[in-house]
Image 1 (cartoon, rainbow, N blue to C red):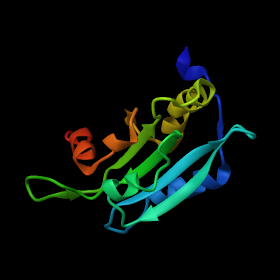
Image 2: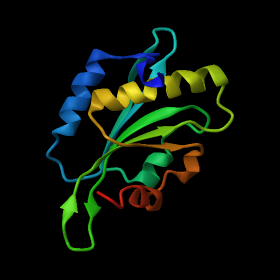
Image 3: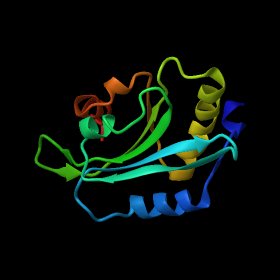
Image 4: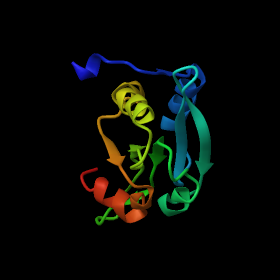
Length: 141
C-alpha cells in the first residue's frame, strides 16, 4: 500500500538532470543534492557537485534538514576493477519536523523508482555520511 502513496512530484528539470547524470563519462565522484520545495510539493535541485568525496560533501549539506543525495562513486574493487555505482542516500536528521520528515519519507520510493535505482540508503545523522560508510553500503556492487 505504501508504494502507491505519492507525496511530491519530481521537477521535470531534475528528471532531465538525473538522466544526464546517469550517463556521465567523468571518472570522478559527483553528487546531485535534492530537496523538497514545500510550497509546490516538488523535489527540486538544491546543489550539484563534481569531484567531491563523501566526507567533503558532508560539510556542504545542511545539518538539520533532510536531503536526497544521488552520488556517483568511483569504487576500487579488491581485484583491480573500477566501477561507478550510483547511490541514492536519504538523509533525515533526528529532530526534523515530523511533517517535513513525512514528506521526504513519503516521496523517497517514488524518487528511487523514477531514477531507476534498485537500492537506497538512509541515514539519521549527517555525520554518518562518510566514505567508509559508503564503501560498506556498496560492498555487494
